Image 1 (tube, rainbow over the protein chains, first blue to last red):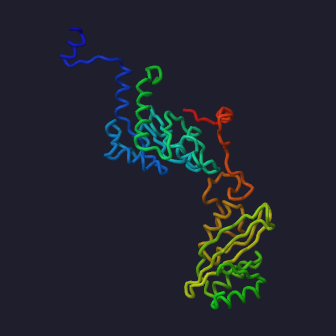
Image 2: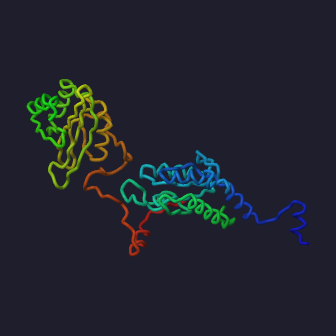
Image 3: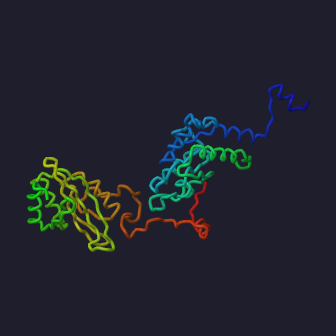
Length: 160
Length: 170
């Protein structure tokens, strides 16, 4: 019987600090309500009971950037909206992540014109791109799980 | 042509040297821009065209000169009549009189035309952009305005485009 077994019997579990913090971060990520176009419908579907994002601790969509740590940019961002997007991002408390959901948010999609930003990575740093027009809820959830993987791999040095 | 429209069309053609054309039952009057305000005043006060349904513009560059037509769609609620006015405007910095004093709702329409086509309406009370950001340069619905700002990516030029892309920082 090792020391882990003994402490576990006493109700003590040991693990690395960064593991614990990353575990906490991934399992209670609050996305910001930021639906811009048709992708938002799929985002809502991903929240609804059929797909149920709350399985991953993400059932709370916050209407305020100050309470959220994940921004899902769901839809095309117009050039007029871009400063608003950046301001909302700046208002989010760190640590914060961004998912570019769908083709329009990732690269402009079918809208290669003067009015639409050709990918939100021109405005905010993006962690995960989800392809699709619009992506199905499974695709969004896959994107989120990919982000979780990324967050789990973060180390102490990166937080500081 | 609709018989009820006859007097209005006749009056405008006579008084404001407007040329009349008809297409698929829609009557259009081509009015010079100096006469526009008077023509609208006459239409509203004498012939009861009390609603400006729509005001917009077309850019015929480079086929036609003058390149812009400003189009007014008038409606008479009493007679259920529609009449279209067209005003040709030319030049890179075109300007024409506003009809905001006659039809109040022209205000936003003219702001949109200014925003999209760059046609200045003299005497307009609040000529700002309405759709594009205030610091925008150019007028996007002009035919000589570039359509996109990023080249379409293929395998041979994707790296080049990627290098020039202004990626955001934290």
